[in-house]
Length: 110
Image 1 (cartoon, rainbow, N blue to C red):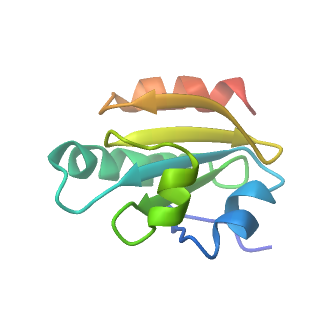
Image 2: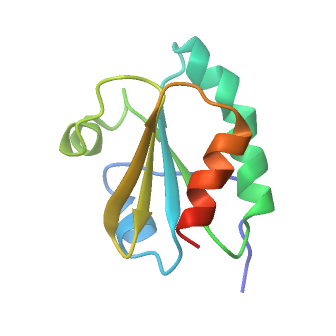
């Protein structure tokens, strides 16, 4: 089995497979290239992907390139982190937060 060592890019067409059908909890980072807070947390999200490899999946969605999934989950502010377990959204963080806060949320769903 290949373990994920960095976050994966998810699109409107791959969201169901990568997130909703995942056997592991998933944290999805909704962001955009033009968003400074998104850029600020991006390295933290990638670090979490390495630390949680094999335990949780960490994904990123570019809101500009993937309007359908962004609208489906009502993402209006960036960055927004959505947490999924068993194919359902279970938690949300809006805004840039420290890595520790993201990890605490992830740990709730492991």
